[in-house]
Image 1 (cartoon, each protein chain N blue to C red):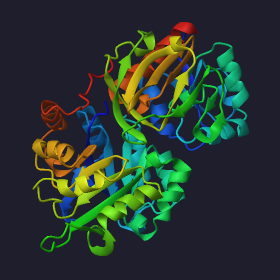
Image 2 (cartoon, rainbow over the protein chains, first blue to last red):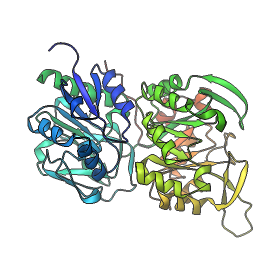
Image 3 (cartoon, each protein chain N blue to C red):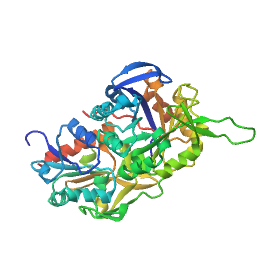
Image 4 (cartoon, rainbow over the protein chains, first blue to last red):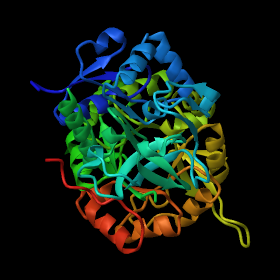
Length: 208
Length: 263
């Protein structure tokens, strides 16, 4: 490949764009912010960040004309990294506001069960259940930063890369083809987070 | 297992880190973004900025501090001081902060917590509670009152009741500071912390009184705190964040030990 990997970070509302764009740049990506479908032209990968609620996120994606291009992108096997809410909306639906979400992966997002504290805020260990290049250089049990009250339950166990326990274990990282999702915030997870972003950029670079 | 967090707090005045005694005799301690980055590399789990700039001079300066910090320190950032509306909170989050802490503004108008939680999620809304012990009569239970305006004004609010109310109004986290212990280096008020932490389901950050690593351990063990905040012991390099975490790990508490930088 020639030059840096080009990544568009979707801006569909109140998400903190500073940290994710700067973190991707710190690991060598050429980063742009896409507020609409035109912003996806010429990029190699899409990062879907997110804080907020599933239903309003889906509404904002639709309003900005990003929902269908994102679906097409994922269905055609091009690289996407979903983070936190951006990870949850890859699945079919969410208990949060009973929202219908993108459906790129089979499964439903549900509230954390038996959590001693909610929201689940803070650094928690990510236990690798399947080795994958997305988690290269990340020691099993490494701490990542989480801020959420919901997590997806994939219908297909084979996509699961890692689990984290807060109350009961939940899925904290998945991969299926070029579709990647993490429940934690790599852009807020210091060196471990930068490692995952660097791995993602490496995977995209190898695929384009 | 959720790690117990160690959080350095930076007082920021007109875009510079300052330290002083009871808001007096402020000395310039450097650039907030640089100091935050250093703490992040040393293993800080989060950085708290407390804006102590006078209101009329404030606008814009803190946003620039947050923006510069979020561009180079990839850990969670919390900003407290001076945010009084949903729109002001939006600006702080868009600059790169993850949470906003409300203190006096929440006491004056608790519905602000609700409005901000509905808009940004309760995970982004921290209620800071400054509490002071009330004289205890023989045989009676200990009570604490809420103080505002940096401890200069008293309220008739019971700190524990206010903590529960703040959570019910939308706060996703409580930053509990003991005014009795603040700056005294006599240890955290673990009784106050435990009274609150055992009554709410949201994380509690202990603040006020850290003298050394042993206090971080008792804040978690006895105070039931999820996170521990300190300022002067870190700024004055009496202890590093690594020192504190090593002591906590040695006591069997789950802490995140910083990883080597990405090559």
